[in-house]
Image (cartoon, rainbow, N blue to C red; front, side, top):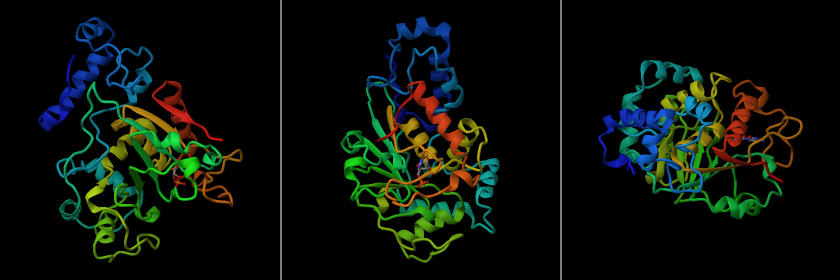
Length: 326
Ligand code: C5P
């Protein structure tokens, strides 16, 4: 059995290792070698893993999935290529951004700077529930099933209080950006998705002085969250999701799709809840009584149909399990 001891490896060796591992896993003529090495079957200790070594039908997934991109920024991985930086700045057309290196330097003095979740190995079985905000969660009674995963990943304005039977109590990770921020409890990890340099300045401010109260709309000037549990979604990963998985559809991926890709890259088994429009194509929320008619799905910022089709394909190919609600 090959043990991929990532944490003990030098950072620069990782892309080469993943390339070699990926090749060994995919190349049909190496099946015999894989069996000899005890690499046939699962790449983790769950019943079925996202990376399934013997899957003949895996080419669609493997053409898109690239383990060398990591969803989170650390101090070491905070350099963006010129290409990524230009694309990222274009997303919300930020005018006169602050110097990114200086902002990141300040940020990583405030929040943890080390790499996380680079601990994949054949003995690990990390189960994750990704909970989108769809109204299809109503009356679903998924709550305790959602909570049974190791990680429960929620996003944006999602409340649990009052909806526990359907959505659960537990939140280990909550993804948000300044304009969608809510307060969190002390044990939840906040994952900021930055769409511009100001978003990184906002999280510094929201955890300290409260100076920033406006981006392109008014935002929360302070946020309740444990600063030792704040993580930053990597703009380089965001671009990879857009290029490789969405093939350029929409202006940029939705929070839900970014959360799903986060899970696909750091979990061994992924269950997905709360994704899907209503019968009229509206992106309604489970906590709203008045259906949100025509929300962003029709604005062209995100390509909801394309994202949902990729989600269905991931489910068809047994990479995730999709629960479509009550
Ligand atoms: O509306 P909001 O962006 O907060 O929802 C979070 C995510 O949940 C979306 O980005 C989308 O991926 C998913 N969603 C969905 N169907 C809905 C509402 C939300 O798939 N009706």
